[in-house]
Length: 130
Image (cartoon, rainbow, N blue to C red; front, side):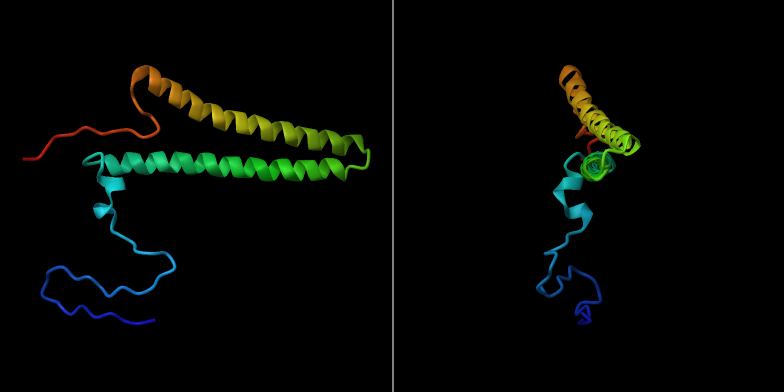
C-alpha cells in the first residue's frame, strides 16, 4: 500500500495518481449526477428510494431462500404430517411475503401514474439560485 503525499498543499485541485483498482474510480457524492439531479435536498429522497428498492430486493432474495428450505423440508418429511404441514406453512408464508413486496411496488407505480407523482423516484423542486 502506497502513501500518496499532496504535492500542492497550499490548495487547488489535486488529482491523485490513478492506481489500478478492483472497484474502479470512486467519485464524491456531490459530483455524482445521481445525487444532484433533483436539486438541493434531492439526494436524501434518492437515497430513501434506493433504500426501499434494496429492502424489496433483500426481501425477494430472503423469500427465495425460504422457499428452497421449505421445499427441502417437504422432501425430507418422510410422510410425517407435522413436518409436511410446517413445510407447506413456510411455502405459503414465502409466497405471501413475495405478493406483499410486489404489491407495494405495484401500488406505488399505479398511484404515481394516477396522480402524476413519481413515488419511487421523486423530483424535488426548490428555490433557484441566481
